[in-house]
Image (tube, rainbow, N blue to C red; front, top):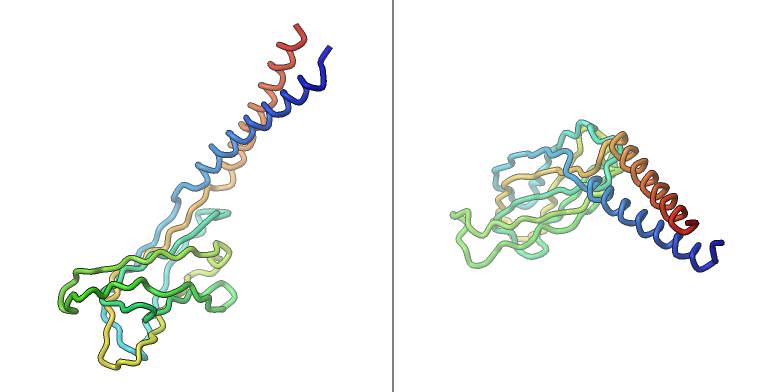
Length: 185
């Protein structure tokens, strides 16, 4: 006859296996599925905001995460803000471009900074996704070079997630069944 201690142990083993399966399926969900890069290759000046769009083909039925990566050069700290346009026509402030000024002349392309912004995946409902740089410098002679902007969307299509979930449940059931057979003999 099975004791309460044995039952608890079976439950903990089942939960452990379920957690491992969820971790493994979470790893699969975090795979890069879609990217779209826009080559900006231009200098921007104060009061001349840079605006561009990214195309997202909605190949991911339920994205789990998204990022916007921007390369720039000659950026002073807290000088350029990045905004993203969502599907409702609202602009969302993402943050500032990382500073790349370190005494390097503006004629060279050394000292390029790369800034990665996390994006709420629900903002990707619109096609295209708009992005802009808002200039904050008071110096009319300042310029910032923008290299590229890359939209990356992470997730797994729904069928793959369902298959992983079914495999996880089957594993938990199988281990529970084998464990109960081992205890009853």
